[in-house]
Structures are given as structure tokens and as C-alpha cells.
Image 1: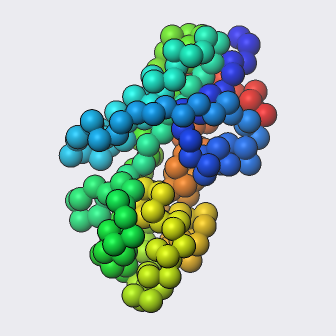
Image 2 (image 1 turned 90 degrees about the horizontal axis):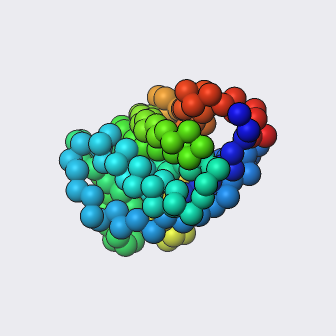
Length: 196
């Protein structure tokens, strides 16, 4: 079996960088899925559905390819949070998150067009947030970083200063679980090293 083109159905620079740093140079194809059309209260079902929609939205543009779609949300006290709407919401969210434990869910949908197979999985990581001050929250939100990411923080950026520890896969929190992707590739009959 030949090695298909690896397509990332996401405009997320963090996901692209994760793959590149791990030796995979993806073809990036933004999905343009309207996430507001999917309203589900179960975080696993939500991220898996959105990840599948994103992968399906770009799969038709390719023939011999593996298409990966991902979506992440943070759950805190049973409430699901995606990207904050604005700075005010980001500040309020951080005031709620500080000193708490959030659960970060990332859905992964991998479509293998050569075998006509689709795998959908969810990575789950517990995130322990620091008890940050109002001043630190305001300064962080002023950088703009938390406005563009699910959960209102970027672990690989300035947000990393405000996370005490993780339970589970750390790359999952950045938007794509590399160990889970390796397992999914294996289920489809590929070795991750084929894509290096």
C-alpha cells in the first residue's frame, strides 16, 4: 500500500506546527464548517461530530489522501466552552477557570480515501489551571492569544504559564493528540514513520 497525501482539514497553526515538528508535512485545507450549526450537550459527541464534518468538507477535493479533521472544547463544571466571543468573555472565563480543573476534549476524524474508511476518536485531558490574579488575566487577554483558541488558553504559548499540570496527553490540549493519531493510522494499516 502506497503512502497517501496527508491532509489537515484545519487552519489551526498549532495543529500544523504539531504535525511538522513530529515529521509530517501536511497539505493544509481549511474546512469552513459552520460550527454553530452543531448543538450537542455531550462534549465527546460534539467534538467528534465537528471533527468528522471538517474532514468530510475537504475530502471531496482529494483522491489518494488521508484527511484529518479535529475540533476541541473545554468543559468546566459540566459546561462546554469553545473560543471566547470577545475579550470581556475571555476575562470572565479565566476568572471562572483559575484554580479549577477543566477537561479538554479533542475530536479526531481520519478519512482514508484510498480504503474508503473513516475513524473517529476523542482525546481527553484534565487541565489544572493556576490561581492567577485579575492583573495576570487582564494582561494575558490583552495579548489576544486566548481569543483564538478553544478553552481560552494556548498551552504552547503564554497560556502555558497558567497551567499547573495535565493528566493525559499534552498534545491533545494543543489541538491534536499525536499518540492517538499514531493509533488511528495503525488501525488503518499505516505506520506513522511512513509519513516522515
